[in-house]
Each structure stands twice: as C-alpha cells, then as structure tokens.
Length: 480
Image 1 (tube, rainbow, N blue to C red):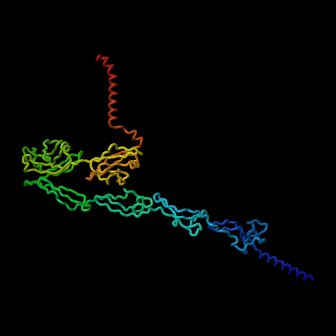
Image 2 (cartoon, rainbow, N blue to C red):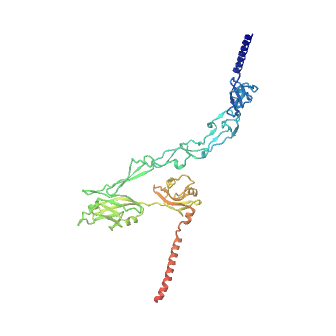
Image 3 (cartoon, one colour):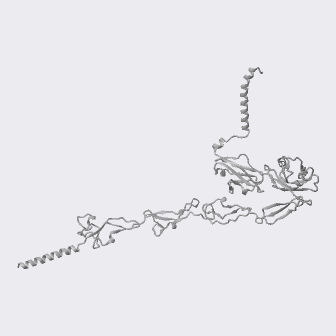
C-alpha cells in the first residue's frame, strides 16, 4: 500500500511539472515597444504600441504593473488591448498644406525669372500643378527663365572705309539691345571698325611727266570704289649729255608749325662748279614766278658742296594753303639748266568750344563745339568712345557744330576729356573739355577782362605805396 502511494505521488509530481513547463513554454513575451509618432504629408505615423514574440500587437501595456518600456522581455498577462495586426498601429499620411503661387511674368531686363501658376506644400516644400496635388512639379516645370526674347541677326562685315555691324536684335519684352550671344549690349559694342585696308592695283595717269614737271597718277580702291590715292610721277629730268637733273622733295607737304621743307637737286652741285672761282653761286631758286634772292634761313638756304636746298621759315609762313612749284635753275642759262617739283601747303582744321569748355556736374547746360571745316557725323568720339546714340550728341545741318547733351555729360565722371571727329578730307580735329564738380567750378580762376582789372588795381596800389614812401624823402632833400 505504501509502495502504491509513493508511485502515485511521483506520477502526480511529474504531471504537475509537465503542466507547469507547458504553460511556461507557451506563454507570450513582449519583444518590442514603439512610441507614438505623428503622421505627415510625406510619411505615415503610428500610435503607441507593444509587440510580442507571437506577432501580436497591443495598444495598451499587456504587462500589468510594468512601465511601458519595462514591459519588454516580460510575459503578457493582459490581452485586453490586443489589436488585429500591424496596420492597426499606423496613421496617416496627412494631406499637403498647399499654398498658391500666382503666375508672374519674367523681367529679363533685370535678370528676374517668372513662373506659371503652381502650388507648394508648406510642410514638405514640394510643388504641384493644382490644389489637389495631382502632378508634382520640378523647378523646370513652373519657372520661366529670364532669357531675352530676341533672335540676333542682320549684321554685316566692315569694308575698307565703312564700319560693319555685329548680329543684333531688340528684346521684345524689355527692349534692350541683344548681341549674337544673347547678352545685353550697346551700339558702340556692336560696331566693327572699318578695316582701312584699301587696295590700289590699277593706276590712271592724269598728268604725264615732262622733263621739268612731275606727272600725277590716280587709283581708285578695288574694294570700296570710293577711296582714291594719288601719286607723283617724277619729272623725266634734263639730259645735258652728261647727267639728268631733277628736284625731289624729301617731304612734299607742310603744315604750319612744322620744320621747313627741304629739296634734293644734283643740279645745285653741278651749277656751283661751273663758275670761277669754284663754288660761285649760280643757283637760282623760284617758287612759281617769284624768285627768292636772299640766301638765308629766313628765305632759303643751300650748301654749295651738297645738293639740298631748304626753304626758310619766313618763306614758308608767307605761303597760303595750296599747291606750289619749286624751280631750281641756272641764273646764267635758265633755258638750259632748269628743273622743278611740286609741294603742298595744308590748312590745319580746328575744333573749338563755342562759349565754354567746362561743364558742371548735374547742370542742364550742354557743351557746343565749332569746327572750321565740315565733319563726318559718324566719326564723333569722346576719348576712345564712338558716339552713336542721338540722345548723346547732335551735329548741325552745316556739319560744323557738335553739341554734347547735358544728360551725356552728367553721366561722365569729373575730369578732362577729348572730343574728336574727322573732316570730310579725313583729317582729325580735336579739343579738350572739362567736367567739374560745383566746388571745382566755383574755385576755377577767372579769365578775361576781370584779370586785367585786377592787375591794374595791384599796379595802382603799389604806385600809391611808392609815392607815400618817396614824398617825405624828397621834402628832406629840398626837391619840390
């Protein structure tokens, strides 16, 4: 009996242990705890939840008496908060918070782009086509670039005497000039200077040379058909059986203020060896029909041992602008030994300020300049800048007056400037003008009659002082 009791006791203990082991083995354990996270327009959120090792989810702590985070690793003892699955833990996503951006035109003149109408989420920053966020936009979809609406063309190359023009167009939106690269520009940057490369290949003799007179040949530019070039054909010379004599100008053009002209003639050496004694002066010099007699630096001078004759300053300054012929001849036998050549006296054109050469900054007054000869309106420059804009300058109908506008002058910095232009003969005329501040203008020295009055006043003051000093001395010496 005791043996049976022992056996039953052992069996009961085994059954109890197996039951306890089974219950322990199949009890669920919390494996994860996730805090609540809010949803947004770009991602889902979640509620606070727990997960056990059997894949069950709970929206409340399944472990009684444990903290939310302390439940991890402990057995579930409260299944009242069990959820159907993972999806029950998720929330959102939310709708976009959209803000409308109205259409805006581009401002290409100031480099500001425009845009079509679009909507932008204030949370995630994404852009869409409508208030339903139907289609997402990239910047290229809604931004209108600040490019100019122009198709530059119409340029033409320069010629030998006329400037060319680069491709250009005006932007239909902002009105600015646009070059061939699509960039804003100005007229002076579009101009291509004339090449100046005239080609003269064919010559026409307009005056045949003689023994004592040079000839002239003229050529017209093969490229432009306008520019001409004139050359002198040397005189054939006089053949006396021994030599041919001729006169050559080392420089055949003279402008007042330059060194006098010098001419070369082997006839001078020839004539100065004919007389007795040797080097006696048999050389005659004539300009046109007027003979020069005084051999000096004022009229003319030559050296008997050489072959050069130089006209003096007095002679050169007495000649009006024009063309002249210099004759070298034998005073004893002019019909035998005579030769000549031509030379030119040029008039120097001028450009002068009309009333003043000074402009005060922010003044409404323009500056006017007067040329002594007609100028080409397309060659007016201030410094190296070629003027094209009619709002900057004006040339009168007689082409002898240039006026710089007040707006043009006020857009310049203070300082000294040079205005220049070319005459119809291709000569350059120029003069300086000055842009001053108000302070500089008020401190500029006065000129004209007022300065003369000042000098006389100073002279009278000094004279009066001298009288005051001398009178007492004269009284002491008895001078009355």
